[in-house]
View 1 (tube, rainbow, N blue to C red):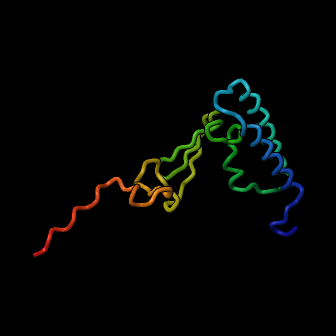
View 2 (cartoon, one colour):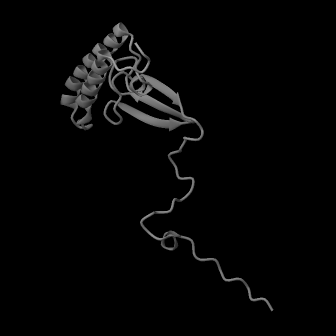
View 3 (spheres, helix red, strand yellow):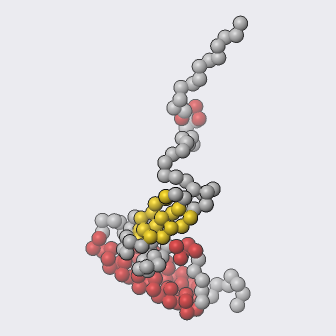
Length: 143
């Protein structure tokens, strides 16, 4: 088999991952009664996915690996099953189901803190309207 070739196992893993994501995609935080049932379904789909990937020796993509809790096998969906924070150039993901924490370093070129470092110009308005500073005083007359 050539590297990069898509096998039926790759397709099956992808379908299982999409099903697990779609279980949690339409949920909001207030639906606690339905959340536990959907988390149970999601967990069983992820276990099937990991078992199939291990048996067929299919490597999961980094995005797929990072979106699965290593402790309780739940898809980490922000504001539904996990909390995301940026602290000290790291992305900290806390699973709401088991309180497991994973830390992923963020390269310095990509790092964007949660506070504003500079005011960005709004593209809907011309630059002269967005400036909140008064115009500079005119230069003193030269004699």
